[in-house]
Amino acid sequence: MEEKRRTQNDMNIGGMVIRILVSMVVLAIAAFFTPNFSITGLMPLFLAAVAIGVIDWLIERFTGFDATPFGRGIVGFIVSAIIIYVTGALIGGVTVSFFGAVLAAAAIGLVNMIIPGEKKVF
Image (cartoon, rainbow, N blue to C red; front, side, top):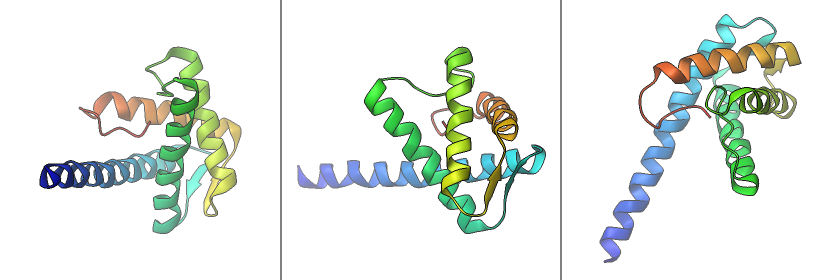
Protein backbone atom coordinates (compact mmCIF):
# COMPACT_ATOMS: atom_id res chain seq x y z
CA MET A 1 0.00 0.00 0.00
CA GLU A 2 2.77 2.44 0.93
CA GLU A 3 4.63 1.55 -2.27
CA LYS A 4 1.51 2.46 -4.27
CA ARG A 5 1.33 5.87 -2.53
CA ARG A 6 4.99 6.50 -3.20
CA THR A 7 4.49 5.71 -6.89
CA GLN A 8 1.55 8.14 -7.10
CA ASN A 9 3.64 10.89 -5.45
CA ASP A 10 6.52 10.22 -7.83
CA MET A 11 4.16 10.52 -10.79
CA ASN A 12 2.83 13.81 -9.43
CA ILE A 13 6.33 15.19 -8.99
CA GLY A 14 7.34 13.95 -12.43
CA GLY A 15 4.21 15.46 -13.95
CA MET A 16 4.94 18.74 -12.17
CA VAL A 17 8.51 18.82 -13.52
CA ILE A 18 7.27 18.14 -17.05
CA ARG A 19 4.62 20.84 -16.70
CA ILE A 20 7.23 23.38 -15.54
CA LEU A 21 9.57 22.45 -18.40
CA VAL A 22 6.77 22.76 -20.97
CA SER A 23 5.75 26.08 -19.40
CA MET A 24 9.33 27.31 -19.67
CA VAL A 25 9.47 26.45 -23.37
CA VAL A 26 6.10 28.09 -24.07
CA LEU A 27 7.06 31.21 -22.09
CA ALA A 28 10.39 31.44 -23.91
CA ILE A 29 8.62 31.22 -27.27
CA ALA A 30 6.02 33.80 -26.22
CA ALA A 31 8.70 36.17 -24.89
CA PHE A 32 10.71 35.83 -28.09
CA PHE A 33 7.80 36.64 -30.40
CA THR A 34 5.81 39.07 -28.25
CA PRO A 35 6.67 42.77 -28.15
CA ASN A 36 6.79 44.37 -24.68
CA PHE A 37 7.36 40.97 -23.04
CA SER A 38 10.85 39.68 -22.32
CA ILE A 39 12.51 37.19 -20.01
CA THR A 40 16.26 37.46 -19.53
CA GLY A 41 17.95 34.35 -18.21
CA LEU A 42 17.15 30.77 -17.36
CA MET A 43 16.42 31.36 -13.67
CA PRO A 44 13.83 34.12 -14.33
CA LEU A 45 12.27 31.82 -16.95
CA PHE A 46 12.05 29.00 -14.40
CA LEU A 47 10.69 31.31 -11.69
CA ALA A 48 8.12 32.78 -14.10
CA ALA A 49 6.88 29.29 -15.04
CA VAL A 50 6.57 28.38 -11.36
CA ALA A 51 4.91 31.70 -10.46
CA ILE A 52 2.37 31.41 -13.27
CA GLY A 53 1.58 27.86 -12.20
CA VAL A 54 1.16 28.85 -8.55
CA ILE A 55 -0.97 31.93 -9.31
CA ASP A 56 -3.15 29.89 -11.68
CA TRP A 57 -3.51 27.16 -9.06
CA LEU A 58 -4.45 29.70 -6.36
CA ILE A 59 -7.08 31.29 -8.59
CA GLU A 60 -8.53 27.90 -9.47
CA ARG A 61 -8.39 26.72 -5.85
CA PHE A 62 -10.20 29.72 -4.37
CA THR A 63 -12.58 30.63 -7.18
CA GLY A 64 -12.99 27.38 -9.10
CA PHE A 65 -12.14 29.34 -12.25
CA ASP A 66 -9.62 27.79 -14.66
CA ALA A 67 -7.68 30.67 -16.21
CA THR A 68 -6.94 29.24 -19.65
CA PRO A 69 -6.37 31.95 -22.27
CA PHE A 70 -8.87 30.53 -24.77
CA GLY A 71 -10.58 27.85 -22.70
CA ARG A 72 -12.79 30.25 -20.75
CA GLY A 73 -13.53 32.93 -23.30
CA ILE A 74 -12.75 36.59 -22.80
CA VAL A 75 -12.70 36.35 -19.00
CA GLY A 76 -10.11 33.54 -19.07
CA PHE A 77 -8.10 35.53 -21.59
CA ILE A 78 -8.12 38.65 -19.37
CA VAL A 79 -7.29 36.64 -16.23
CA SER A 80 -4.37 35.03 -18.10
CA ALA A 81 -3.08 38.47 -19.13
CA ILE A 82 -3.34 39.65 -15.50
CA ILE A 83 -1.44 36.56 -14.29
CA ILE A 84 1.35 37.30 -16.79
CA TYR A 85 1.41 40.97 -15.77
CA VAL A 86 1.58 40.10 -12.05
CA THR A 87 4.34 37.59 -12.76
CA GLY A 88 6.31 40.38 -14.45
CA ALA A 89 5.90 42.52 -11.33
CA LEU A 90 6.98 39.70 -9.01
CA ILE A 91 9.90 38.14 -10.88
CA GLY A 92 13.09 40.05 -11.61
CA GLY A 93 14.27 39.48 -15.17
CA VAL A 94 10.70 39.39 -16.50
CA THR A 95 9.66 42.63 -18.16
CA VAL A 96 6.12 43.03 -19.42
CA SER A 97 3.74 45.88 -20.09
CA PHE A 98 0.00 45.31 -19.83
CA PHE A 99 -0.23 45.36 -23.63
CA GLY A 100 2.63 42.84 -23.73
CA ALA A 101 0.76 40.66 -21.21
CA VAL A 102 -2.33 40.70 -23.44
CA LEU A 103 -0.26 39.72 -26.47
CA ALA A 104 1.57 37.05 -24.44
CA ALA A 105 -1.76 35.60 -23.26
CA ALA A 106 -2.82 35.36 -26.90
CA ALA A 107 0.49 33.72 -27.88
CA ILE A 108 0.34 31.28 -24.96
CA GLY A 109 -3.28 30.47 -25.78
CA LEU A 110 -2.31 29.65 -29.35
CA VAL A 111 0.57 27.44 -28.22
CA ASN A 112 -1.72 25.72 -25.68
CA MET A 113 -4.13 24.87 -28.50
CA ILE A 114 -1.26 23.18 -30.37
CA ILE A 115 0.21 21.22 -27.41
CA PRO A 116 -1.76 18.01 -26.86
CA GLY A 117 -2.73 16.70 -23.44
CA GLU A 118 -2.67 18.24 -19.99
CA LYS A 119 0.89 19.61 -19.99
CA LYS A 120 -0.13 23.19 -20.67
CA VAL A 121 1.01 26.50 -19.28
CA PHE A 122 -2.28 27.59 -17.76
